[in-house]
Amino acid sequence: MALKKGFLRSQNTFVKKKRVPTGVFVGVLFSFGLYGFFYLFRESFRIFTNDYGGEILLVLSPKENFIYNFFYAFIASLVGFYVFVKFSVENSINFQNKKLKFKQRHLLAEQAYLKWNFLFVFSKVVGFIGISFITVTLQYDIDFLSEFGIIFILLPLVLFLDLWPIILRATGAKAYKWMLISFIFIFSLSFLYANINFIDYKKINQKIQSCNIVTAFSLEVPRSQTYRKIESRYLTDHIYVVNDSIENAQPLIFLNDISNKIKLEHLITSINAEREKLYFDEIYRWKPNLHIDKKVKLSYFNKIKQELRKANVSNIQLSTSIKHSLYPSNFPGFKYLGMPQHLIKYYPEFENFLDSAERLDFSKYTLKLSESQMYRTEIVKTFNRIKLEVLTDKILVNGKQMNEFNLRLFLNKFINKYQDNYVIIFEPDENISYGRYIEILDLMCSVVESLRERASLETYGESYKELMLQNKHFEIADKYPCNVVEWTPEEKRLQQLLKKTRVF
Image 1 (tube, rainbow, N blue to C red):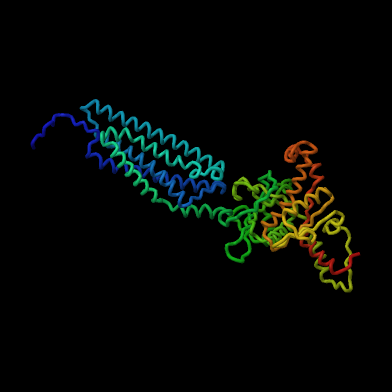
Image 2 (cartoon, rainbow, N blue to C red; image 1 turned 60 degrees about the horizontal axis):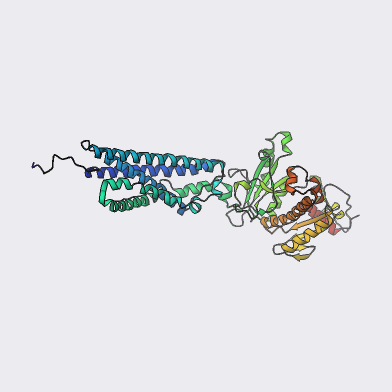
């Protein structure tokens, strides 16, 4: 073999060309594995957060999935490029040229420091965000893509520009050319990875949504301006009422979670079973929290309320979200908020009496009524009263049509005038939606709250909420009570009987 000129001189090549193909293969393989780790970690985290109480729901849209995939893929490709450089340079170290050897090792040490420190900090930040998502529902407060989208651009770009020292030392005058080639290669590789889904994220989305009543049935509770918070959460059971996806089907009822579906006729049994788990002194503080979709017909809600009365439930909470809030109605912070409602005690003997009375021939018999705690038809007559009817298309006050604005003004004057000596007989049509029912109920309660607030400031110089915290609100509450009467089914039957006969 013929000797070439200069064969005794050391070769000052920073990277040997024959090492490049193998280095590329190793780098691509490493980047693909790292991208897979990022992807699987994210999907595992999404599944885990869904199982953590069912309140942290991380559902990705196709756009979000691709952007996050591309971000992870770009970082993985940059780390893979470092692995390519490390493999290629380490196998090209010139032990005869000490100056070149020092540059090679210094470059490797510098890049190792930068890359591993970045991965260390990156893992810490991701871990902190992950823990925060588990403990606090950050997905309702932070939208990373819309609010911090610049980070998803700047961070990979800064990491890519960090490759400049490597490319400059390896290619010299052709650094700009190889920088562009490297960017095109990394960008293309990242784009290819971003289209690879190791797990079908849509199936995970479906799993997350199907395990939660709110998302599985698109449950949206009404919003209200007035609300109270349930303090004793462990003394609360949640009743969810949603519309079935089948047209004209009865709404569905779930007790506490999606796995406990019950029928209306079994509600009493289920309620009693839950109360049997409590101590005797806790039963009276126990309260069911009703999460009812605003599109459910009021007639069905009235049936549920009647079953709860038969189960001797005296107080319920009508779950609502906060009106004018930027949070969606399914925000977990709203779970224990709502409008408390007192249920009139159910008397089986009163219903037996009505059954017998309805069979009488009133052409021969008359109905004699005496005062009784089983019905309120007589005691209501001792108050200054109005009748408020809510129909499907209008609102009537004592038979006169009114819009909501004028209704608010009218109620404000009426309640302020008679204070504790008033009653609003609330008669909503059973064909209206539950959301409409809450809307009008909230309007009445908000008028009372505004009068209480004004009286609190005038009398004590403090807001009504501050007085409630100090337990000094009872005088104001007694002055402006929320006297809203809704007739029970038994009282409605009684009124029908009274129309047929004279009462002595």
